[in-house]
Image (tube, rainbow, N blue to C red; front, side, top):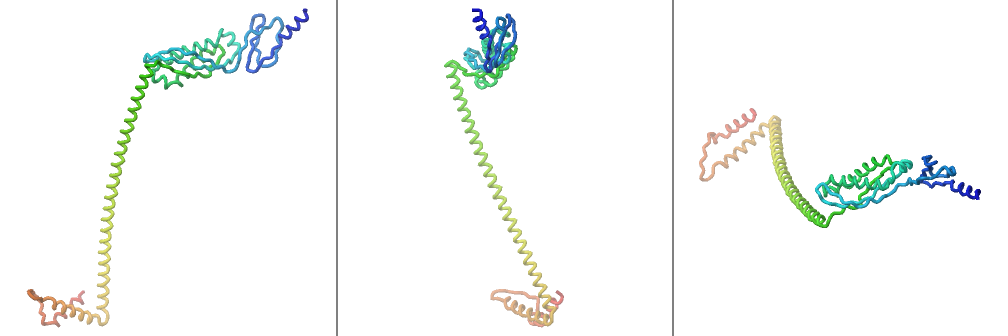
Length: 295
């Protein structure tokens, strides 16, 4: 019988600890050591496994609770808290039930965070509220050997009357934004039309100015070309006169022009006064020749 009890006691002294699990061993009622994953043997009759802690990350449901926002609107908020035991000894001896304590602390922090915000901001500041809860609970749970990794708000519920009022407000806000968008579109259309008219006027004036410049340059080039041609013609006439027989040819040309001009002076019904003696053709040709030589 004694041998059977000894064998059973020895068998119960063997402990195989799974992964991500920690066992707290007490010897004669006092903390002895922490058993991590692996094979372990306890001292029979003296060692006892007092606590068993999981080292995995745990998701804890935070029950819904009523909160009041900064503008005194009642909302009902619930969420999920994620935590992990980092020190099995502290989690066993630091507090009696770290799960319940963590949930209660998360609810208290949630009420405080929501109370600082107005109703509209509460829906928009989920990330801010989550960060506030995580920071506060993590700092408070550090002596318990617990690490709070994150907190997520699941639902934010309000009464039906508040929901109807919010829907009316959102509808008015959407209509306001639509009206502003329409007015901005009309303003931009008018601005674009005025810019187009301005650009058109500038282009027309620029075209007219360029046309006038081109016409002026054309007329100037024409005058210069005529002057150059005239000068070239005069130079060629002078060269021809100075050549052999040029003077006699010039006298003949002058005589022909003189006769042609005199023939067209006197017309029927007209009176003409001349200072020259038309009967002395030789004298007139001589004067013309003298003028040509002087040129």
